[in-house]
Image (cartoon, rainbow, N blue to C red; front, side, top):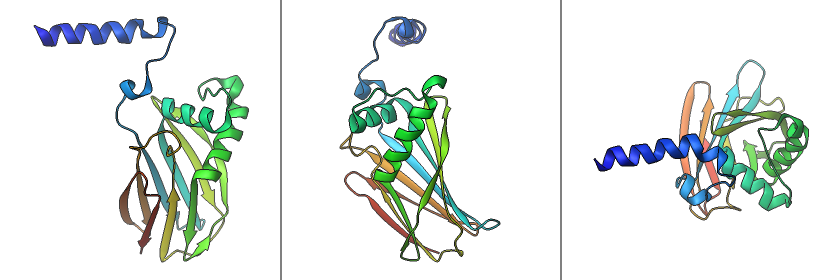
Length: 174
């Protein structure tokens, strides 16, 4: 009986939530504060390609906190302004080194994928790296329980690690 009641409440919240006029508190919306960075070396074009996956509501809050400006990643008319904010945020919170050389990273763009946002960046052309170091402090400006998972793939070899707040650096040798 209790399960049926809780399920009914959940469905009511899902159906009526958008009409309530305010967002739920982020801590109660989803208590897991996690992002992923998937760093892959593209053997064909010689670039390191990075795909971030971040909960949209958390990312918007982090952007608002850092830039003191309203953010809405899902509004098409705000996409250009959001591109600037997202690019600047990543510049401040993510870096890559390949074989001890800091890489300039180019922002490619972002897209909404259900309740998450995927953000794409890439390096310029480099030789296949033997060692990759990542600095990742994404959402550290928002949560002190943030977990950032970093996957790195070179020539088919994938290595993964987690960075529990306040940790920000991971190095993998290939």
